[in-house]
Amino acid sequence: MGKKDDGVNDRMCIVTREKGEADDLIRFVAGPDGSVVPDLKRELPGRGCWVKAERVIVDKAVARKLFGRALKAEAKAGPELGAEVDRLMAAQLGGMMNMARKAGQFITGALKVDQAVRALAALAVFHATDAAADGVRKIDQARKAASFLTEDEMEIPSFKLFSEGELEGLLGQNAFIHAAALAGQAGEGVVKRAIMLEKYRGDARVGAHGGAGQPNQ
Image (cartoon, rainbow, N blue to C red; front, side, top):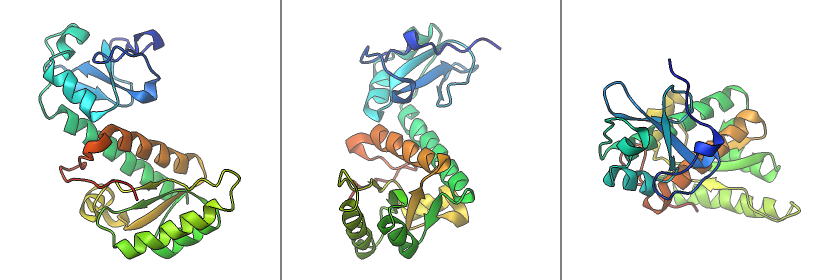
């Protein structure tokens, strides 16, 4: 196995030519079959290239056929690459949610979420995109009330990334309508990955399984 190529000096987006931190970029390598493979964990061997972690930028890299030149290989990226990155990021987020739940750092249910928010125990809240407006509104009220108890008076983040059906596909029996990430390494990991996925989708809000997401409340 070759040595992976992920040095700081190499972290330049092949589209924008901007350098950045690893968390702001996505690494890609050439697969054995000549396909372009997303390396979200930055662990795959061989020469890698970097693209800014935004769906629109990944799509531009595909459209401009930049991967072959950057990877110095006969690597071809199909138009589905941007959606594949979305699916992989969604799967990572789902896995972290399950890990946090086992660690007691991810709770579900409107009442538990409301209580955690008001107790200043929640790092962020999550809603299914098709959650009832009344349920979301009540938790938003809790977020607003809790903000007055903090020094900076900032509301904790609220995410709407998946529909109920998409959550069932990701989490199975652990799917939720309303949830909250709590303090701790796993809970922080959930919020970090949620921010990355939301940023990746940008204004397009393309759902992890092809469905359209919704902006945050």
